[in-house]
Amino acid sequence: MEDFADLVIVNATVHTMDAAEPQRVSDAVAVKGGRIAALGHHDVSQSIGPDTHVIDAAGGAVIPGINDAHLHFISAAMAAFGYVRLEPAVAPDWAAVVDVVGEALAGEDGWVRAHGWDEALLGPAEGVLLESRPDTPVVAFDSTGHQLLANREALRRAGITTDTPDIDGGVIVRAADGSPTGLLQDGAMELLSRSMPPVPASTMRPALLALQEQLHSLGITSLTDPGLGPASAGLMDGAGSTAALELLGDLAAANELTLRINVLMLFAGTGGVNAHAVEAGLRSGLADAYRHRGIDPAQLRIAGVKVFADGIPRSGTAWMSEPYGKSCTHGSLVVQGATDGERVAELHKILGLINDAGLQAGVHATGDAATVAAVEAIIAAADGPAARPTTSGNRHYIIHGAFGDPGTLHTMATHGIGYSTNPLIRQEAGDIMRQVLGEDRFARHQPLQSASGAGVHFNLASDAPVTSTDWRRTVVAAVCRATRSQPGNPRDPERITGLESLAAMTANAAWQDHAEHFKGALTPGMTADLCLLSKPWPVDEDIEMLLDTEVRLTLSGGRIVHQAT
Image 1 (cartoon, helix red, strand yellow):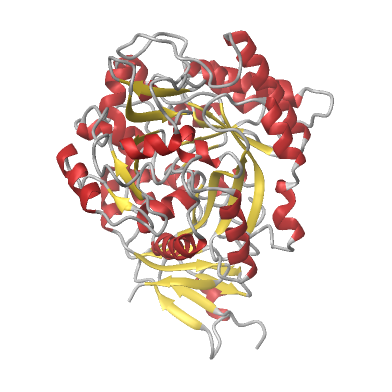
Image 2: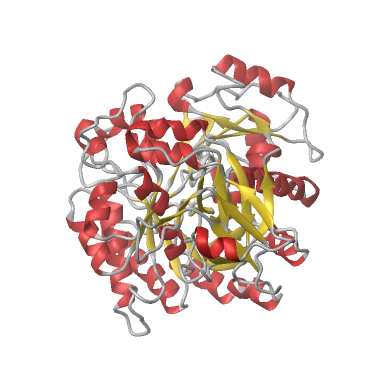
C-alpha cells in the first residue's frame, strides 16, 4: 500500500527537462510524498492504488513548474492589487492618466499611489501630473520601475525644489528655469520614495497572497525577487523594504507561502552605489534572517545581493561603448566615483565583498560597457584572496546584459557566470529601443542563440511588473523576437526554440538558484513542482498557440495549488 502514488497524470506528454536527456518525453507521471515517483505508462500504472488521485491529461503537456528568475514579487503584487492602475488598458493616453489619478481615492496614509504608465506608448512625461490634486500628494510609478511622476505636493513633502542638486546615477528632469517637472529617473526616485510612508502590512499581505494565487494559476512555482532590503526606496516603487522581507518570512512560517522564493538583498539603489553601503549591509546579519527563523531554504531563501552597475538606455543611464540616444551620450556606471576608472574600481570592491561573503551577486547591466565591467569585476572577485571558483561556487550572474561582441559571452561561459534576460521587454519596448540604440545594436540585443552556443547558463524572466507575469508571452517573445510594430524575422540568428525557452524558464533557472538537484526537471526523486497544460506543447512554427493554452493544474511540492474548474 505504501508504494502507491498520491497522484498520477496519464495520457500526457511529459517534458522532463532532464539535463542528461534534454529531449526526453514520457506519457505519464506519478507523484508521491511531494516528489516525482515514476515516469512512463508501465511504471505509473503499477503505482495506482485505490486512493490515488488520477488525472487524465487528454494529451496535454506536463512541464516542470515555471521558475521566473527575475520577478519583483513585492512590487508586482502592489502594482496588481495595491495601487491605482495606469496600464494602457485603463489609461491609454496622458489625459486618461490625469483623469484616473484625479478621481482616485487616497490611501489611509493620505497619498495617491499609482503604477503602470509607459512613456514608450504615451510620449514625453515631463510635467504631466505636476498640477494635479494640489492638496494631496500623488506619485505614479512607470512600468519600467526606473521612472516616477510626482505632483507638486509630493515634491514639496520630499523637499525637492529648484535648488535640489542632481544625484549620481539619477535625473531630476527640469523645466527651462531649472524647476522640477515631477519626473524623476533612476537614482533620483529615491529622493521622493524616502519621504513616503511605508506601505502598511494590512495592505501588502493580501496583495502578496493574491499575486501568489495568480502566479500559480499560470503554472509558476518559483521566482527570484531581485532587490529587497534597506535600499528599496531607490528601486521600483520602494515597497520592497526590510519590512517586506519580514512579511515574506511570516508567510513562510505560517505555511501560507507556496511559492519558492529566492531573494537578492539591496544595500544600494540605482544611484551612487558604493562599497561602504554594501559592506554595512553584509555586516547587518540580514542575510541570515530566514535561517535564524528555521525557515526551509527550499521555500524561502536569501540568495545574495543585487547590484546596479548602470541604469537603462531609455533614460540615458546605461553605460555604452558607443554613443546612443538623442543626447548622443555614452552614459556611465551608476556606481560612486568621479571618473569611469574610479567607478569601475568601486564595482570591483563591491563584487569582492559579496563574493567573499559566500553570496551570489546579480548585477544589473544594460549597456555593453557596463556588462564588460561587471564580468571583469566578477572574475576579479573570484580570483581574490578569499575567492572560490564561480563555476562551482557563488554563481554570480548578469541581469539584462548587452553585448558588443561574442567575446564577453565566451568569457562568461568559461568562468561560470550566468545570464538572466527578458525577451518580453525587448518585444514591448523594442520600437523605442530601436530608436535609442540604432538598428544594428538592437538586432544584437538579447543574443539568446549566441549565449546558448557559447555555453552560458542563461534563463528567461519577466521582470514583472515591468512586463506581464505570463511566461507564455515570454516564450513566444524569445522564439519570434518581434516588437509591437514589426513581426520577427524568421532568419533572426538570435532566435531560440520553444523547448529551449522552456528549459530557460525551468532547468536553467534552477541552476541560478543552486537548486538543480531538486527542482527544474521531472525525474524520479525531484520535487513535484509541475503544471499540466490543456494542449500539447506547440511546434515552433505555431508557438503563438501557447497563448491560448490553459494551465489546468499546478503542483508545488506535490500540493495542488491551482486546479482549473
